[in-house]
Image (cartoon, rainbow, N blue to C red; front, side, top):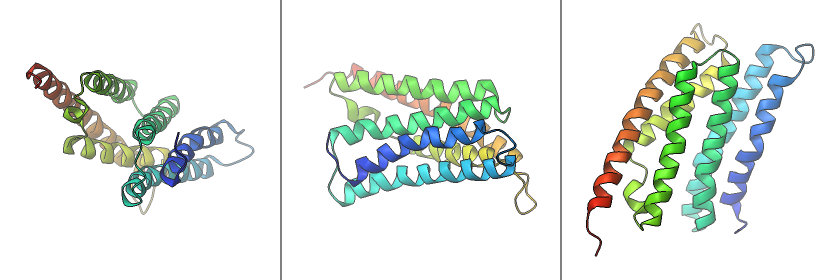
Length: 190
């Protein structure tokens, strides 16, 4: 396991998961719910920034590695799954939305592993629709964690709309990856 700045940032993202979750388990006498929402949203935002930053630095510093390529998506999926399960428990997201998003992440991870086993990992590389889905999903989760009105806007409503958009994009991107993998696997290898 190479120890470098990009991998360290990825590990930091994983370590932030229990930190971000623990605030919701403090007794309400310790901290107001608004403060908990603000801190949890801030930690999630920090994790999202490290997600972008670790990939950027890995490419810029020429510190890409097979381990980093493995760990980065694992960290992303763990953070998103933890946030969605927490939001489900808080009643801020519907179970079907959480199930669709988490289920897609598991299915696509399995698909990528299967394609990698066939030497076709590049055939299930991240597509533009997946990037749009991720952006919508991350902003939605951030807003749903924050939950409080901001500048006269109902953040919960905006976050709810965005998470539904992310769920629809999740299904579309999953179909795209599955169809792409199916056709790629049928091509004769040279």
